Figure 1 (cartoon, one colour):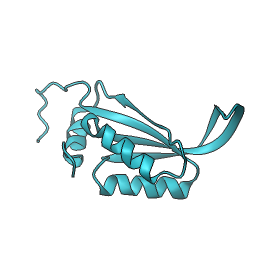
Figure 2 (cartoon, rainbow, N blue to C red):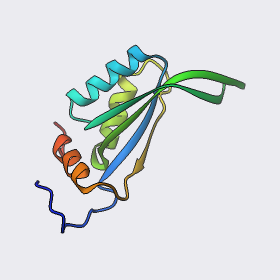
Figure 3 (tube, rainbow, N blue to C red):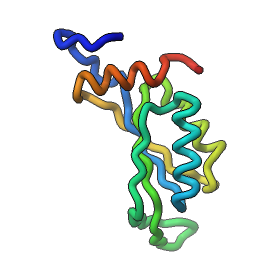
Figure 4 (cartoon, rainbow, N blue to C red):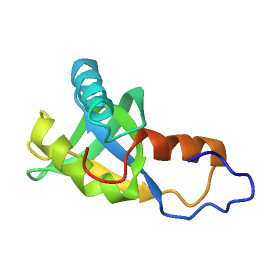
Length: 119
């Protein structure tokens, strides 16, 4: 799929998924596996985000690592399942947002990096 500047982007074809991990080691391990399995084209690792949430009736505050994962929307369910099965938390945060627009050349590359079906 070569980049065609005349071709209009189809909103929702790709998604960005957000996942938090407890430390850099788990973030790197999970990110590498997502790329190796072609579930993601790119994972940005954002260090030291502060998460504040309620868990088991108590307000918690923790430093975590945020993964920003670019993928195909059609692969989000598979990505979510993989994260749940390979994440150190019993309830892993995995949320995905649809990409509505962006740099056409980047989105074309994303399509090439993440195949449509299971790999």
